[in-house]
Image (spheres, rainbow, N blue to C red):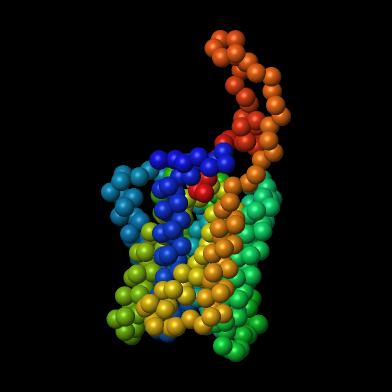
Length: 333
């Protein structure tokens, strides 16, 4: 059921997909901490992607999926290499060289880059409420990062790797969006994961060497990372991305730090300090601001026309709020 709000429609299934994505990606940070002690960054990324590829491939075969349209392949390949491949390796590696707070602040540059790149390359524009909400959320993420740093040291290489992760995450999202015009979310996610797995195959030897030595909890977390934060969450992300703008959807990921704090509190018994809770609340407030519908100027009063055959033609799409020259977009919220 769609609910009209400010001239846009809320797709409740897409909204549910966003919630699933945020929660599962937040849980990934906790699982990575367990697995990263026993798996090298590249091996961890490859193992996660192999499991996700196996799961997605089985679903694809059961649903008798078809190959994507050739016009979707540039976006699928770009997202696969940059987001599924380089991003995961860079993030795993960077988190070993910088403290958690610094990593959180640097990676949270990603949604800002998504908004800028999608506004420029995808012609989504720069809605003031979106930019304001992202500024608020970034401030909250910085507060969470500072509260988590604990005075730890950060290397230049770690900072660069976290920045690489942020840039490739943003580039992957922007590459993925056009592909969804020509392929289904399942096709884009499945074949993007296949491409990312192929890109990480050079780490296969390391994975085979570490797998027999790793304790069972670390390997179970690796399996969890592949099935849920990768196979399922990337699928729900693509489903939502097909139904909203890249900039708006990217802004919702600022809820991830707040959810990470909550999951760590529940599963690892890491009681957050007041500064962490404040930063998480600010992150969520910024996401709420970014999701507010934009105000539109009131239409000029038009002379009344009698109903029926004598009424004039329907108002053009521009007068109903859609941007000139574009199709009307279904928004998540």
